[in-house]
Length: 276
Image (cartoon, rainbow, N blue to C red; front, side, top):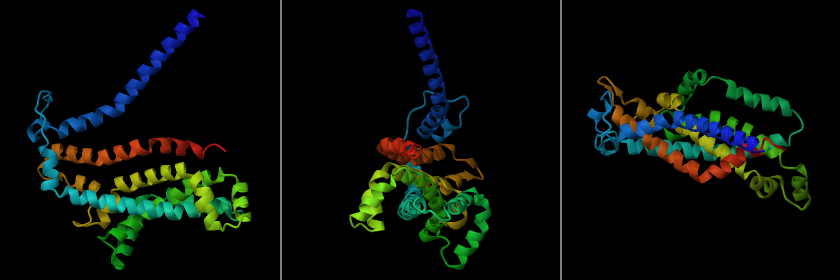
């Protein structure tokens, strides 16, 4: 028995070592970015790095004062929040209808999935022409509608499995008591699938927050988002590495804070729809 216990402890040690190595593999690049954002431009380019360099916040002041990063941050926040909110509002209702649909159920699902399988690069030129012709290029609504084209199918596809995990008897009982279909969804189904809605919302927000290709084509100086602003830091004089790292940290912080608040719901939501 003692031998089995010793073997179990050794196995646990190897597991922890493996987890530490994997964690360092993902964390070290982030820590390096944070370190580079806190040194001067001259020190950021030094090889080998100067580990005794003084800490400074000049790079953060520079991106907000000279690069108008605050405006780009606000653009990304507005577009991501509106795109996510509309996707959740429309996608949850569409998923409820599809989950309870008996006719054409498989065909509709395949159609939604096929939209996700279409390469984004194929849609860039058509969307650019459409947005230009209807006057939505370089506007918030134009970018929000564009993000809905890939966020909405994703949210619908993700929420269908959550709604299918809710017994239909609950919906039937609510309708017998006099609830309409919208009331049944809002008061009975939606509270149950709330963890799934949070998970879909977070992932939809991240898709919009990190999107680069459509934002590059459809935005201008006034509506430029953070990914496009960061890409613009590669100049003819080279990459402004210290300011770029400061910008990356600013991008990561809101996502990290959001993940901390919704972590419990996110884990619960991602596992809820897989078990019936």
